Every structure is written in structure tokens, then in C-alpha cells.
Length: 214
Length: 162
Image 1: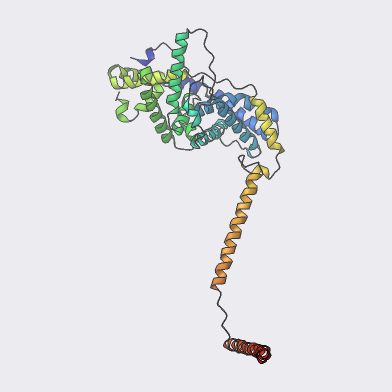
Image 2: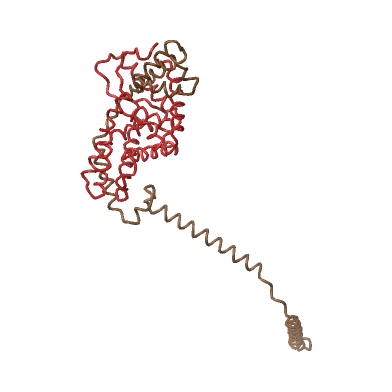
């Protein structure tokens, strides 16, 4: 079956579209750096703007890494706290988001490495009381559809959780943050070819694990 | 088009195709290839299904007090004294732990010092016995014994006479 024949909307912009919005993205990047420079000079409101803009992407990234909402929020607060503490020595030598996600992935990978997630890995069900995000039922689905949907979500989460931590981080940044290979390499401080290797092995594992859902 | 899975570009091309990240020219060329390559077709189909499954993960609703907690932590950070800022965040704040650690260090230091000093004593050269002193001491002991015998005889003699 030709995958393009699937009647589903794409969440991803095409490469062409990405090129077309490049100048707008650059302006955003300049804005981030400018805001951070203002934070360095003592402007608290600029820190609030940076937080408002990047809070959600960072917390989603960390949540998908650690699979626990409370931990994700705590680690995300730590990310922004470190950004704030480093304001005095900030120099816009790299993209702000690269710096931001480097701190976020470092904290998430350390948390996973330290085995602090072991107790929480027992259940990845969104309904579990272990701190995973609560899922509000979609009113447009029947009870049966809702159950099937939740079972599917649980399988996807478990498949992601089964990936090695660095592969998981690479997938999260590629899939959900739409980062290019070079930027992921900057965040994970490895080569672009290493990132491709991580990503393609991760996608292959996920394809095998979720093959029955295709 | 050469099969991308043969020339090593397959994974990257298939991932980009499933993510709809190819430009129209590359996409058209790859779709022509898919028409007769079952292997690429299968992998592309699975990757596209995976991409859509990953899209299903719902967004997280951030706690309403997230910002308030963050700003409270920032305020706490600013209230810390300059030397505390150099300590890691995980540094123990309860006094029992550092007190126990310091005590353990002192005990170990004392034991090490004690064993070192006893070792030094063992290694010290023993003083030579003064032979003359020994002989003198033996002579003194003989004199004392004789004196004791004489006193004893003096005390016992009158009783025998009685």
C-alpha cells in the first residue's frame, strides 16, 4: 500500500515549507537570544516571555522521556532554573533552543540512567495513579472506541519506553520538536551520522514492535 | 532509480518520505520506485503507520502552578548565600549527615594516627641494658636479703633462749 494514499493529515511541514519559513525561524531565534540577553541585564519580564514560549515544548519532551508528569514538571523547572542561574554568563554563541534542549536531555538522561524511573515503569497506563498524565475521554468516541484508543496509546508509550535512552531522546527531538539531524547532534553532543544511526535503529525497533498496529 | 536500501540511503529517505519532508521532485521519484519495489513499499508503509501512531500521543496539560513553583525556586536560589550556590542542589540540608560524616573522618584519622604511633614505637631501638646497673641491683638485693635474715635472727633468738 502506498503510504501517501492514507487519508490522514500530516503534522509535519515539508522540507520546502521548512525552507520557506527559515527566515521567520531565524527571527524567532534572534528573538530568543535577544530576550536572553535582556534577562542577563536583569529584565525579569524577558525571562517570563522565554518561559511562556518554551515551557510546553520542553515539558512535553521531558515527559515523553521520563513518562511521569510530576517528574517531567520538576525536571523542566530545573531546566529553566539553570537557564536563569546561567544568565550572567550567557553569550549567544549557539541557538537558544539547542542550549535549552541540551540541558533538558541531560537532566532526563541522568534521571533515567540513575534508575529513578524503575518503580514508575511498572505501569505506563495514562490512567495509572503513578503520576502519568491523566487522559480526558474524547466525547466523540464510543466507550469501545475509547478503550481501543487507550490500549493503542499504552502500546505506543510502552514501545517508546523500551528504547534505549539516547535513541528515545533522538526520536523525541526529531519527531516532536522537528529538529534537523545537525541540531539533534548539537544537543546530544555527537556527530550527525551518530544521530542518524540512533534514529534509524530506533524507528526500526518501533516499527517491529508496533507492526501489528499498521 | 537505484533501490535506496541497496545504496545505504534507504533509512533516511524512507523516514523523510513518511514524515512528508521530501521536496516534490524527490518524492515523485521515490514514489515511482515504490511502484515496483515491494521491500521499500513495505518499510515505507510501516514507517508511515508508525509516524501516525506517534502523532496519537496527546499533549500534556501542564499544572496550573508550574510557573509559581518555578519562580518560588528562583526566589529560594537568590536567597541562598554565595557559598551555598557552589554546592550541588542535592547537597544534604539536614545537619545529621554532615556531622556524621565529619565524625567518621575524625575517628578514621585518630585510628590511623594511633596505629602509626604504635608502629613507630615498635620500630624504635631498644635502650642497651646497663650491666653495671644490673649487677648493682643484684648486689643490693643480696644485701637486703642478708639484712632481713639478720633481723629475723635477732628477733627469734631471745624466744629460743626462753
